[in-house]
Length: 355
Ligand code: SAH
Image 1 (spheres, rainbow, N blue to C red):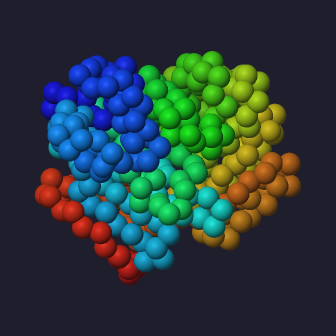
Image 2: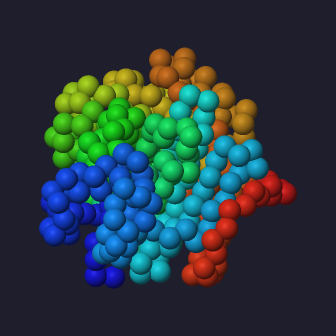
């Protein structure tokens, strides 16, 4: 593909594309893309020939290879095929008070966290700004008539390893799609230079750090990048982020039976979280084919939460959403590795898997 995808174009590049048109067209098309969430072919206020030319010269980046809706109807998962035949996932979650989309930032991931399906598959390439933004636009269209309110960068990939494109996408989401920066969350494995650069962006984003272990020995195993950016330095970077942005950090903790769910783990986590006044999200591990561990039992997750509570740390147990549609962490792509290249445009309800 030679042309830039439609959400990769800056407004200046769009203006160049529309050089032969009256000047007001630039704003008209830009608003069509970002305010009305329309494809050029749907912009009926444009001359037909122009619609067709824009569709060709500013093509979409994403084609749905698979679109699943959970049996409850509150979660959608889309597997996108990109121009180079690689695939990434987007998940849309409808709650009573908000509608959240979880976007991917890379095809695969180089961070190699053993329990993560994307990490198991390795790194392919970065997504472009347009490939990230278009996931949000597509989700906002699916969410209609409800309004998409939140974006979490918790899909495939490590956002801070694709810093330039991710930050450009964040600006686009706030400035052009009109989302509040407070409703944008970047989740990182803990890339310290990225956290520092993000703090300097003057965007009051929410930052989530995937901690999973609060001693270096265990974290080196679970989150290998910890060898380069160990806990003491990570804690310092989180404190600086909080100071610079005024935003509270949240810490992600996948609950893995017999691995990071002991009383001692809770104490170590509390010692890490308390000085940062961080909020902890406890997520029962989603089992993946390449990692021989299971989620902590429900009762243990609650006890762990209570231990944190007693130690003065706020913690929320996060429900697994869309388990019936492999909505967790690269699982849809892993499962459909063989079907993803087949043109399969369907939308279906699937019922929970047995066992
Ligand atoms: N690379 C970024 C964002 C993508 S992963 C990061 O690491 O934060 C989003 C979150 O899902 C991270 O907290 C990650 O550790 C967690 N995660 C990955 N695989 C998981 C699994 N199998 N079960 C539970 N959480 C998982």
